[in-house]
Image (cartoon, rainbow, N blue to C red; front, side):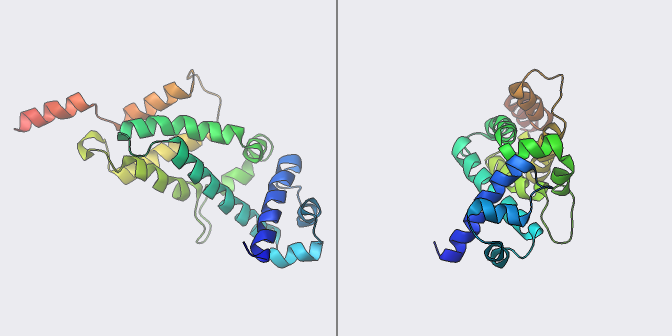
Amino acid sequence: MGSHTRLRQDLIDAALECFSSYGVRKTQLSDVAQRAGVSRATAYRAFAAKPDLIAAVVESEIARFIDGYRQAVDLTAAADTVLRDTMPFVLEWVRNHPVLARVLADEPEQFLELLVQEGDRLTAIDVMRPAAEVGLSQADPRQLRATPVQVAEWSVRILLSFILIPRTTLNDVDQIADLCVYGVWHPQDSVDSERGRQS
């Protein structure tokens, strides 16, 4: 890892600590520089402005999320199993993430910015949907109530709603997962029955 890359990673790590302690809105690039143990000028050479640093933090955490997802969920399993296992993983990951937990509690508008299209920037839905599509790649199309892309997007939108509005009458994440799968999945016996009628 080159010195410039190492500096950027140190600043990203320091930013995560600052965001967790002070919130995104109150954190300044000078705070991050101090936490990383570098001068303000050095920090500004790596990131010209705070939005650039925030974008780098988001990109880094997305990569960490995807890596954790691929390790936690068996993407070679049946598609309904992948969907059912994905829901608890995502909800627990968000709830246990110190920065996201603080942002959702104190600065929800910062999270909402990730959901809104702005120029060419990818939204949270754009970023999360491909991972969901991978989990649907093994599915028999007749078992899905829509196309794989549509099911992936719907699943991501449902997940984001639970992240933004966590209070629910549903008992636990497993019940949430079961209901989400039921909404997009035709049971195998109904597919077999339809196949029998067509033969």
